Each structure stands twice: as C-alpha cells, then as structure tokens.
Length: 471
Ligand code: ARG
Image 1 (cartoon, protein in one colour):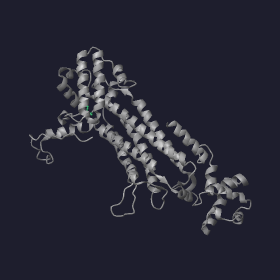
Image 2 (image 1 turned 60 degrees about the vertical axis):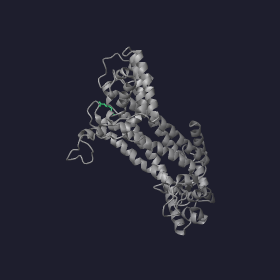
Image 3 (image 1 turned 180 degrees about the vertical axis):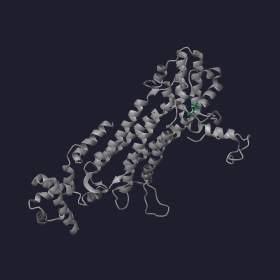
C-alpha cells in the first residue's frame, strides 16, 4: 500500500536550525513522526471487524443502545465500502487507522459514532487489530508453504530415481536422487508450517477489553468479543494484553527461519543453472537477459529470494530492538512494530510464490546430473561398505584400503570402476569381481534403503506420503 498523503502545516515556518527539509515548523515534524496512517491503513479490515464486535458487545451488555449499535454497524460497513473502492479520505492529521475510521464514523452517523470508544482504548484496539492481521498473514503464508511443498513433492515423485551428486562441503560425497533432494526441502517447509501453527495457537487470545492498560469499570463481556473475532479466549492480564508483541516476534522469527530455507534452495537453483553445472534450466518465465551479454540467462528470481532473507532478518532484529527495555505497558515505540511485520509478510509471500513458480518451471538435465553423480569417486563409500560386508574388514581398515584405491585411480585419471580386478587385489587380495556391482551410481542409490535414505524405493514412498498429506 502507498504512503498516506503528506500534508505539512505550511502556515508555520520551519525551524532555523534543523527545519531545512520541512515546509513548516515543529507541528509538521511532530505530525510526521507521530502519524502511522501511511502504513497502518493496512489494518482497516481488522479495525472494522474489531469495532463491529465491540459495538455488538456494548449493546448486548446494555452499555450502548441497540439503535446506536445499528448506526455504528451501518456506518462501519459504509466505511469498509469506501476504503475498498479507494474513496476513503485518509487524513494524516488523524494520525492512524483507528482515529481515521472513528472520525469518519462520527461524520457519517453522528452521536452513535462517539459512543463506540466506550470501554476501549487505542491500546487494546491496536493490539487486537494487529493480532488479527498477523493471524490472517499466518493463514495466507501457511497456504503458500503448502503449495510450495506440493510443487516440490510433485517433482520429487517424478524424479525419485534420478541420480544427483550429493555434496558435503560442496564436494562430491555420495550419489543421491533428485527426488530425495527436493523432499529435504519439503521437510524443512513442513517445520516452517509447524512454527507458524505454534505461533498461531499461542497468539489466538483477545486483548480487546483490556482498555488502556488496567481493564474497565464498564460491565463488558470480553468472552463475547473474543468469540466473535475467532479468538480462543480473552487474554487474562490487561497489562500483558496491551504491552506485549511477542506474537509478532514469533511470526518474524518463523519468517527468518523459513526465509533461510528458501534462500538455500534459491542458492542451489543459482548454482544448478550456472554454465559449469547446467543441472537445470529455468525458462524465460523465471530468467532475465543481460543488457550487454547476449548469451546470459540470469536466475534473478532465485537471487532475489536469496536476498529477501536480508530484509526479513533485519525486520526481526528491528522489532526485537524496539521492544527490548520498554517498561510496561504501552509506549509509542510500539507503533514501529508494524512496518517490519508488513514488510516481512510481503517479502515472505513473494519469495514463496517465486520459489513455487521456479520449482514448477525448472527442467532438470537428468543425464548430466547422473554423469556428475558418478564422478569424483562418489561410490567410494560403497566400495568400503562392500569390504566390510563381504570380507568382514573393520570399517576403518576398509576406509584405508578404499583410500589407496582412490589414489591409484586418481593417479591414472580414471574412475574406481575403471580399475582392473588385479589392481584392486593388489591392495586387498580378498576382493572379487562382485565388487564392481556396487560401484555404479544406480546400485549406490538403490542400496541406501535405510529409513529416510535416498533409495528410489524410499523416495517414492516419501513423495507419495507427502502428496497424500498435502491433498
Ligand atoms: N497508532 C498507535 C500504534 O500503532 C495506536 C495506539 C496509540 N495509543 C496511544 N496510547 N497513543 O501504536
């Protein structure tokens, strides 16, 4: 959403010492630093929902007349339509979304509008609105995480048996399958969803009715408003209700961890579609050209997903820093809670959409992946395991024998399977021709049948399990 119109008070002259930037004096500066309407107008739906619930409760409890509630509800619905259609006159002078809507309500329905703020403060109002907003954001992000997981699991099922070089230290380690690799991210994103679900469960309590900080002398029904807004219960302590923003921090922390996951996948996409690798190709839909080098296909979307992590990490640190050291309860510092959360929700949603898009778009060069999966002595561990299994050598001894065979092959510029049986037997006399059966990439991955292992059989099982779970 765009910034609210900025209307400095031109009637007041700028301060001589520091007012150069300002068309007007201190009042304009005060207004500019104080106003949050430029960003918190994003809370308008939640603010109206909260006010509707509050007014209904006030009438139910006999605190306002039913006719007042009727006027308030009608006015708020008209305001919703105005905002929806871009006709609402947002005013910086009215500071924030709460006062903009309340002032407009009174303009529209008169006296009844002035009764809405009975037994309420902007402190419990903003805490309620923001919880509702974060809760909606969680639900939206959760659906996108599920969609990204579906994209990954679908590719995993199709490539359950296609070999990919598995790396540690970005050095060839052991062959794995592409499907197994995709499913690793499915697991990570599933935990990201778990963190969001935890956050949602904990945060789903209503601050409404805590009023400024101490509660209210009016006979309100906080259970009623909590229920109406889909909260599990009212918060039990009015000071806590207006003072804490831990739910926003949990959201940001969950975002930072998830963005880190997306960033790692993005980095792999960047590496995999680089010219020396050419493991995958992204279509025109997810690449850009260079203005000078005609051959370039740049994976900008992946790079930007990788980079968004910076903003999201920054947002977490920003809000942690805003909140630390604030004496209870509310302080205006807390108005700065919103931009980091909005920015994070936007960046996270965009990153997920781009990631799901790239996962669906990319075309793997499975032949090339297979070729590299077998290079770099990737099946050396299989050879050592054969020595342990067949000749009953201790693993440490088998490791040494294999190391000498790798050195021998390396010196000759060939693969392990290129050594003759005689050359192998020169290092370990018990070796038989059977050893060659474990040195292929296919045999290597097929043998990794342990639960959670990369054997195509296991990968297909896991992909099917995820696809069923993500229906
Ligand atoms: N715009 C304010 C915020 O976001 C609303 C709460 C104002 N409360 C107050 N006591 N000034 O924090």
